[in-house]
Length: 71
Image (cartoon, rainbow, N blue to C red; front, top):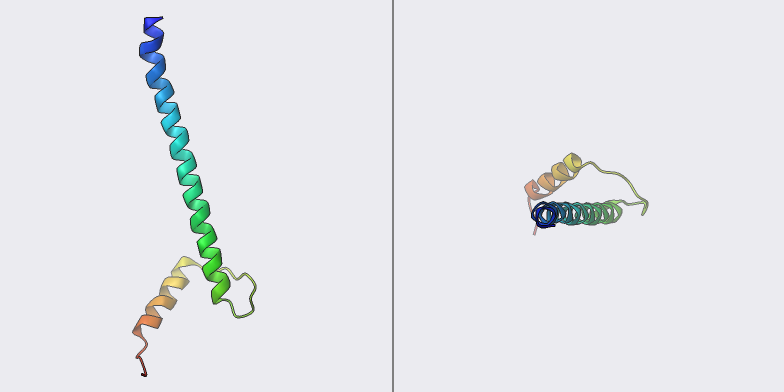
């Protein structure tokens, strides 16, 4: 019984840590995706969903920053 405890508890701990890590990463990816979809929906003139790649979004933001302010 002592050998099972010495091996079993660390293995169960590793499995539990892996499961928690998997769920944390999954939920963060879902949240990030929903934020991207929300931003894309706001940017769309037609109100529908339009996929914009992250490269294109970065290019738009960079162009917006470089525009001279006419105030």
